Length: 147
Image (cartoon, rainbow, N blue to C red; front, side, top):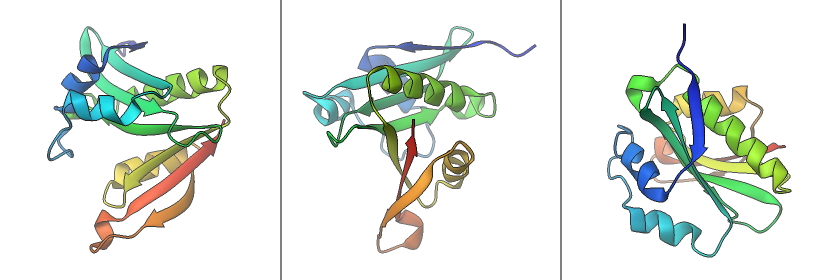
């Protein structure tokens, strides 16, 4: 029987604890970087737990002021991947954003984050733009989903 995934709103310190376990992030952001990013804006900070262990996190905020909610950072600890953690986080964020009156979720990821790109397309996100970088695998890919 699969363990239940519990998603809840948490202080930024809890998200930062999970952030350091994400192997793709070479230099995990300190707490202050997160706080500066969403300062003065409506924000959502959530973590997902399997058992009592933090398995993933997501931080989003109202970046654009255009009726969209921006999913800025998200990650799942590698030992918890493939268990539905990211989907649970995304579902929570989408439901929260709908209740707050947002009409879209926007997100940006890197071209070399193939699993994330595949996930986003599978769950209804559309490509909206590319921010080119010197190395094609470092290009930033913008996506959005109507909610």
